Image (cartoon, rainbow, N blue to C red; front, side, top):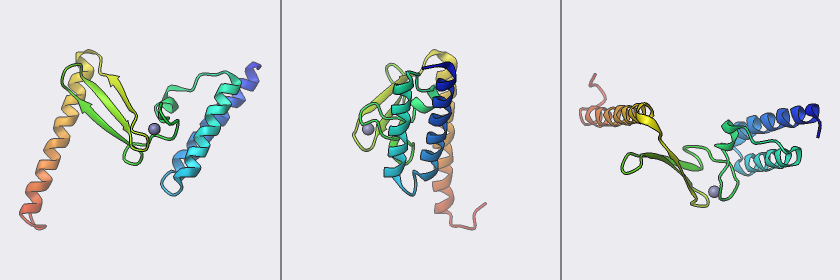
Length: 132
Ligand SMILES: [Zn+2]
């Protein structure tokens, strides 16, 4: 497999993931098919799946992982802090450790901000739609 062939393979993988993300909401089966083809191209060309796409493939069932659609993303601050990504189709859980204090603080701050927004939303809805 020459350099140009690998470059072509990579281009096709990018395109397939782009398409998969575009159609996922309307046709998940088709999106999964695109992912499968992209994986095959990567294996055939013997290139590593780029990291941004690797994250989108379930390690269990090899189908598309899309937060809010086919997977659940949760922050686990206790013990070894990590991000737990659960595939909602096969149940496979992938854990990503949160390394370093900076990462951890940033993620916890985000979590805090979300909880605050939720609490505020509840508070506003209790007071009716006219509340500020
Ligand atoms: Zn899965």
